[in-house]
Length: 442
Image (cartoon, rainbow, N blue to C red; front, side):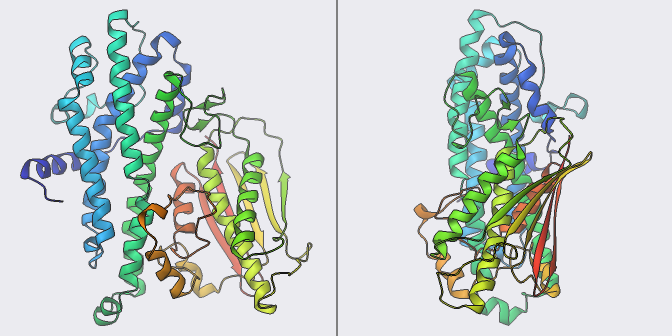
């Protein structure tokens, strides 16, 4: 994509601005606003996001440009970079050319100052409460503005849906390029962890973009009485939900859903008659304080962990009984256990399997984006999939690859950390693995 100097200058200008941190509580405040003020508050949030997304997109562009060792020259990664540039331009064009936005500026004084004139003291917030009532003449302008922005946000979400898959393919192509690896001696521990540092930063902030985009789409859909479509698994019109955030998350229910999804995909991938059983255990369930979280994140992380655990047991079993799809699993010894403990500081989920474990020397690589136990041929087949077969990182479709990209635990760790939690892996080689998922109470 060729860029003129004006666009480059604007991206560079926005990349020097600080990204605004948005808390889970701030995302939930929208539910406390009175009905007559809700559209006004959402409009403030919409205007905040136009500016905030331009800042965040410009940061992602710089981060992709800064990837080391020729990664920034991989075609798949350049494609993702160009998506962010296009989205940045779309937001600028919306401000400049949108009739609904011009009408909003005409009838209201809500519009913030231009980014160049905003001081630290005047920094905008996503949630900005107001007691002001909406005049009937202004209401239609606010509705038209938010409907137009909602359509733009749909486009942005669809455009960036396969970001993770495309960056992963770029990295996989780079890794499998023997000329680069052998000639320049790049594929070593020092550089593997440098790449991890770059990608951790990129993906961590991408999660923030995705959260705000999905959340605001859901808020606007609810405001306009449309069917929420952020995730068909959940009813976002449920009173427990504010956007994509659930104010009373039922962790055992979500764990059961993740278990069913993981068992289904493992059964079909290995063409088994049955899968290893999974036991759900609740302990210390005495704290009745509602847990605020994003269910889609928890489902995604648990699904990845359980998929790995079930796969480990199946392959450990098949290593002893090759080509036997009629294998029977020893319930006491080959059951995956999911233990949920409700602590005062964290809710902790421990997922235990007896699938042979991971060698201690390999544990440091499992979240590096370059670690996978799938054969090279399987990885290369993933590169051959046409774009219309691509899936996003949260898809629970049966088309989800069992493994190969090396991204499962790496992304799951970032999702866990985003709201103050963590993910830790302990393993006993020749026996099994325990994964600890910490969810911070807010």
